[in-house]
Length: 82
Image (cartoon, rainbow, N blue to C red; front, top):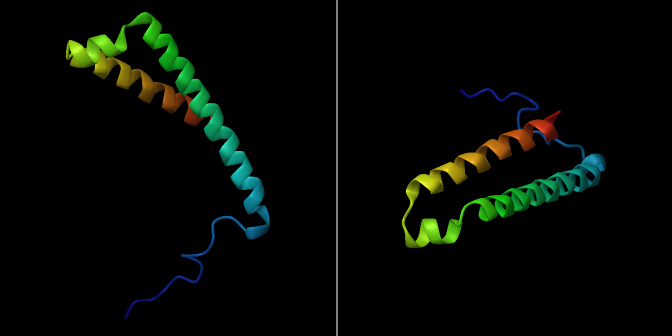
């Protein structure tokens, strides 16, 4: 027999706080996207990304740029979390 925990599947955010939570989430998402766009713009000025990755098949540069983006995502997530 399976015994259910009473509030295990309950709502995480109360409905009266839902709008505030959604607005805050959208603000942080847009800030994160702006930072990613700025970082990609800076990287494309330093490296010729499209030529190196698409034409020359430079996988090492793809790994470096991917690693930079993951590191930036971790920093942004830590800043948002507090």
